[in-house]
Amino acid sequence: MLKRTLTGAVMTAFVVGFFFLRLIDVRFFDLLLLFIAAVGTFELVRAFGERLTRAQKTIACIFPFVLYPVYVFFGMPWMVTVLIGFLLLSLGLLVIEHRTATPEGVGLTLFAHAYPSCVLLPVVTLNHMDNLGALILCFVIAPCADVFAYLVGSALKGRKLCPEISPKKTVSGAVGGIVGGIVGSVLVYFCVGTPLFSSRVWDALFFAGIGTVGALLTEFGDLVESMIKRKTGIKDMGKIFPGHGGMLDRVDGMLYASAFLCFVFCLLKAGGF
Image (cartoon, rainbow, N blue to C red; front, top):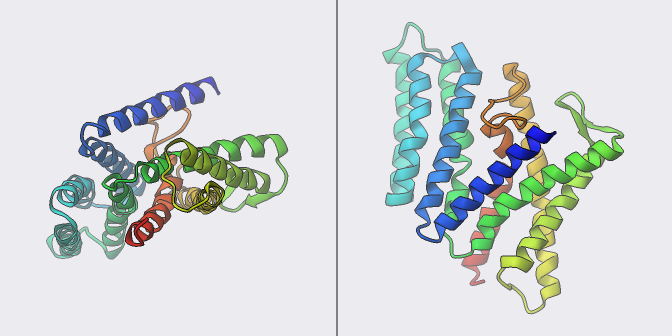
């Protein structure tokens, strides 16, 4: 427990440090997101093991280092070009490595392109918005949901949520996670949130709704990650964070919640809020 707490404190300090660097240039925070994508991709490729050829592993690991700079410096059209280029290259390995490459390997390579690199792109989009609170929500809702779920689930236990996928998760923990997401989201609003409506009560209710959906998506993302690990036969994606596992073990829920947050705040921006 002590190791887990100390590691959590170091991770929090690391992320907060990049938020301060972001005040100098938002692209500093893009570096953090690139780091998350690169490490997560490496963990996933390692989990797939011998089902990928060496060339497929190399292409998958290079992908985030090309995708993110292109998206940040050149925009969406060039990013789409990169996506198509890597898609065609991955398919082309069936010819280039016709003796060893398989359709399954191509599918897993494309999976490694999508998860986590592409799924993390909404956070990059939020980073380049003027609304700092939207970005902070990505890094608050998911951890708050996880902490509350752990504390409530450990204290109350009770009925299992999805025993075939994740035996330790309970219904009480899931409810606690929703409460944690609401608390985190509302706190972000009162600390750095921009007023959206004429009443602070309506603003607080709106952010509570965001916290609810974000927490639910965080919990679903955890289950998706658990299923990936179960299918690949591993306990943790990595050991980069002692007591917490790998990078994907830490950001799995945020990947789902961030897509929702990006959608909401893009709608708000389009509506003039």
